[in-house]
Amino acid sequence: MNGKRNGKPEARGTRSGAPTTSAATAGRKQYFRRRKVCKFCDEKIDVIDYKEVKLIGQFISERGKILPRRLTGTCSPHQRLLAVAIKRARNIALLPFATKL
Amino acid sequence: MHRYEVLFILRPDAPDDEIDKAITQMEGYAAAAGGKLEKTEKWGRRKLAYRVRGHREGFYALFVLEGTPHTVSELERRMKVADAIIKFLTIRIDEEQKRAAKRAELRAKKLSRQKPKQPAPAHASSHQAAEAGQV
Image 1 (tube, chains in turn brown, purple):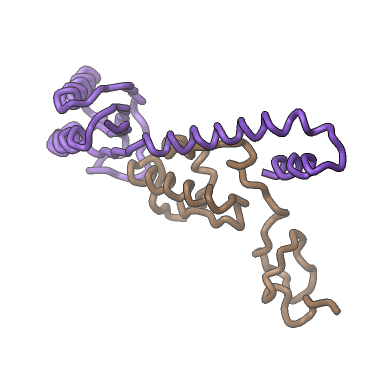
Image 2 (cartoon, rainbow over the protein chains, first blue to last red):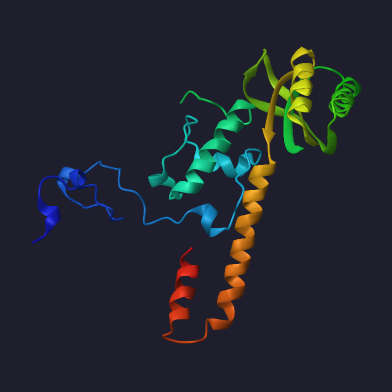
């Protein structure tokens, strides 16, 4: 019994890295990449400094929004620290609050 | 006594010596209010991510100081009043640093514990080593 057969694959929130290639999912880009590791856990970074704009800036979108964990692969404790750092950086004009596309 | 970090932005259109003067003035205020300056950094002119008081660029300066909350509120009050300073952000850093030091310590302890046991095969310790490797 293949449990994933009922309805559209995306309704199930599949965690597979490879998108299923069927007509129903054509154009669907929501699948996240293969199990990315948390960058901070990997490099053993303890402190996420709001001043390190080059590092922090990797985790915001083109519009300046904070990227979700499922896209960046960050683990939850680090994501929380990252969010705090990004917000601080925004407050001191090191990062934008919002940019026009 | 807590450790604080104060990052502030000065108007870029003032001549350099005026900017330096303003920074040393702030250092004086901090010391007068009972603070001990540990570090002063001048980052220079930088493009701002958004317009602040009409400016697109600013001169960034950083203080790391040890002091009481009273020191901080005094310093911030002066900064609010100063014309040269257009934005400031004060953060308390001792808790953060303590936590980071703790984590680093734990990690060092973990590593020193696992290393000698690693070559042992099919052992309870090898299971621990695998776990440590996962993190």
